[in-house]
Amino acid sequence: MEPQINEIAESLMDEIKQKVSSGAELDLVDDFASPLPVIVIAKMMGIPIEERHRLKMWSDSMAIGLGEGYSLSNKQVRCPKCQKACKKLLNKPV
Image (tube, helix red, strand yellow):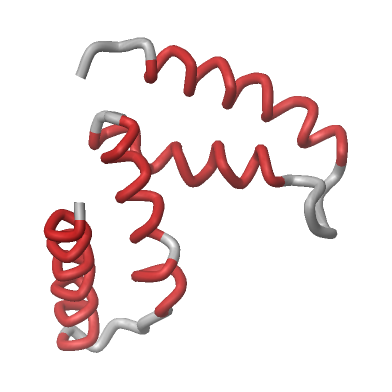
């Protein structure tokens, strides 16, 4: 898995280089630290590329309540939807 993780990291770094060279603002967390584990985990789980962006939203929703700033009602509404979507994706053949 290490070669695939390196490939993903290099791809993200290429995107960062393009961003910086175009004069765009860089946010290391949003542009590298956050997407790297999401992409790796999604790849390990066999989540299709077009659905990977949702994995971050789902994991954030399931983590609500571990910190401050989120309402319980938001957690109760979003988590069941996330769990249902994850189950549906994980039951699909890869």
